[in-house]
Amino acid sequence: MSQLVFIAFQDNDNARYLVEAIAEDNPEAEVQHQPAMIRIQAEKRLVINRETMEEKLGREWDVQEMLIDVISIGGNVDEDDDHFILQWT
Amino acid sequence: MSIEIKTNSVEPIRQTYGHIARRFGDKPASRYQEASYDLEAKTNFHYRPLWDSKHTLNDPTRTSIRMEDWYAVTDPRQFYYGAYVGNRAKMQEAAETSFGFCEKRNLLTRLPEATQKQILRLLVPLRHVELGANMNNSKIAGDVNATTVSQMHIYTAMDRLGIGQYLSRIALMLDGSTGAALDESKCYWMDDELWQPMRKLVEDTLVVDDWFELTLVQNVLVDGLLFPLVYERMDQWLGEQDAEDVSMLTEFMRDWYKESLRWTNAMIKVVAAESDANREQLQAWIDQWEPQVYSALKPLAEASTGIEALDETRAQLSTRLKKFQLQSQGVSA
Image 1 (cartoon, one colour):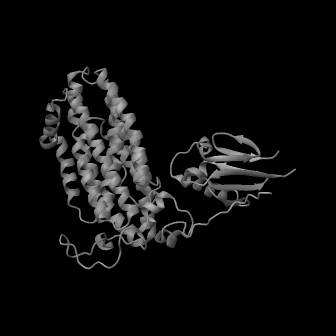
Image 2: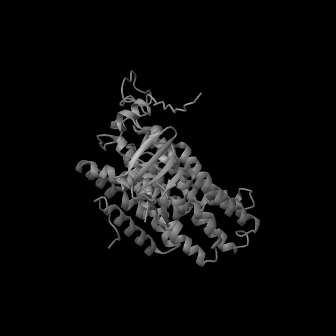
Image 3: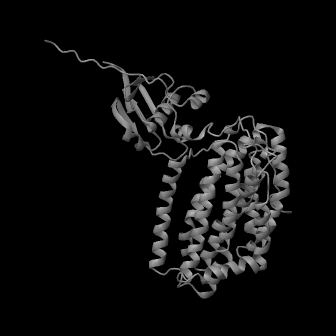
């Protein structure tokens, strides 16, 4: 079974901040720009940190805000107020 | 017959504008970047402005602060027009609800006469200070030569006009919209001994020529003492006089000040860190102005919260400036 976790966003202004934050927090992740979509995949684990996002955005950010721009995810979700983690456990 | 479905993707020739790409590389840029960077013209000025023949248009020498690149000063809130307006619309909606509630329940007019008078004497005249802040920030926005800096100041100018209007509406709520309370509070501003040092300070700042000196004095020194003193300490003090309801009407100012600290801190940090010459210049301005701001607010503190509250605010400002390796007097010995 594949050990890849992934998340795909619509390619819009909001998602660019997300992609930037994810790329910073997950240096091993691979970012694929597809038509109107940005897909990020990594071995085993991907994390989105609220702190990094707030720094990028310059405002308070709720982890759930990202769901607006999500197309699809692959992996088990571990979510709380400070991060959103995708992993296969 | 078999049909093969293929996707063809078309790569855009450019990801963003040329001037943004030269700064950040050719990748999708944020709205803030596109609306803020390298917009003001820097070269090919044929004529000097009639109103200032010593300088060219967008002349970087309008301040004695020197920056390699003024676009290093950016807004941590990333406000461009759309983001700013959206954010303020939300804040305004909350404020309108509070004003509506107070008006419907007559929360201010049922206060004792003496307390109403205190609000008119100690709080409402600050609308004249706000108008001064509006004019100062507009002037700065006009003189700056980087859009990241000028937009922070012009948004602040608009905010100050808004704060002035909220203060005026407190007076209108007290006098049933006749305007009598506004006239009364203007008399305090013009003639009451309490306000004369502050009035002088505001008028002195109106003729400061160096725009960075002006932003330091207005947005860091004056606001740094005035907002915590009035909207935190005096607010508590008014609460003790049973005028807690006024807090609902000044909540905007508290939220706004907390937010404005972010950009003023970011700006001073970058400018002070650029060179020792900049830091020395900032220090000289602080030494010149901070004691004046303190003494201008002294009568107001004495008439309301007591001088200790002002001293504590002064100590807070000193701690804040220390982070940028700048000294202010702190609590007077």
